[in-house]
Image (tube, rainbow, N blue to C red; front, top):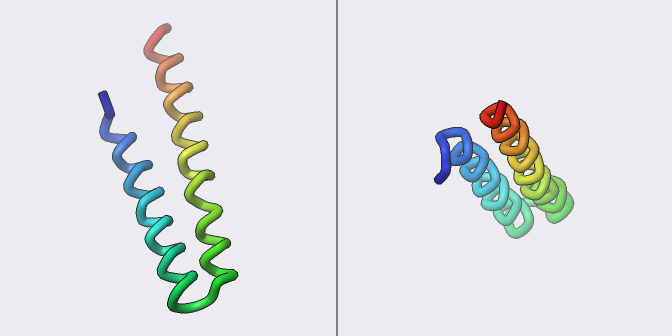
Amino acid sequence: MFSKIDYYFLIAAFISFVASVGLWFFYNQDYGLYVGIWVPSILAFWVGVRVVLLDIDRH
């Protein structure tokens, strides 16, 4: 069901989440918030890539 590129996006989002939590608790809360914004951005970009790839496969 998932392709290779899907795993890259999921891994990137997970790493961003872990980095965000680490920054929040151990360094600076503002930096943690900034990196935390990346998670939904990565996932939204992943959805866009999936839509384009599915459209290419249909044609």
